[in-house]
Length: 200
Image (cartoon, rainbow, N blue to C red; front, side):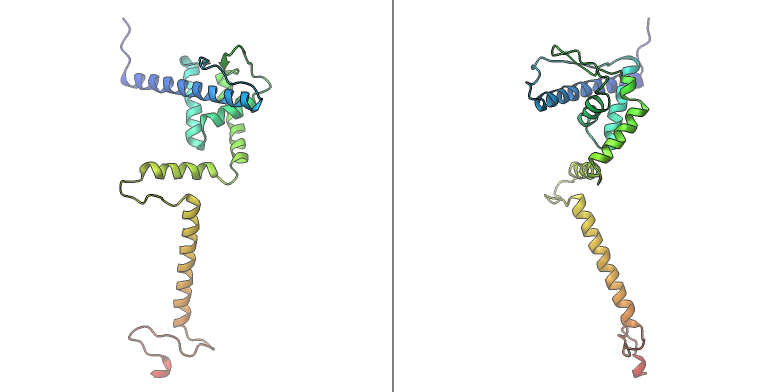
């Protein structure tokens, strides 16, 4: 009699199953988007995407979700680039309303695929817009009850911070120069309790 799976094994199986379902859903959305761009009809509502969910390939699908989290992009973005871009020349399309990855999961999650994806992300988001959007979304999620209805966006926060630091630097320069005596500034402003050199 086989031993019952441990809590870690059950958690891993749950994560793999969730990753497989998420990739399958993203694959259907990517395929429908491509059909619409090509001027063709969307897939039938009963269409299913064939995605591995067991064995080593099932575990490898976790890599795609890890990339989505690490690079702050969606699974749709990853699959659209890798399947319709990077692997488009070798990808097999079964047709007949059947949707599959068309390439091995090992290739899809390999080092070369990751490097190509990183380069594509830089081209698609040269200013790091994906990271800023992810941060803004996180702020909205963790915003406590009673907080302001609209929190500043990342770009607004960066601009406000720059203005605040510039204002502080101007203030420090003003205080420094107003207390120093040099030719052309014979009567510097004295601190409270101090006397100007001309009044000593």
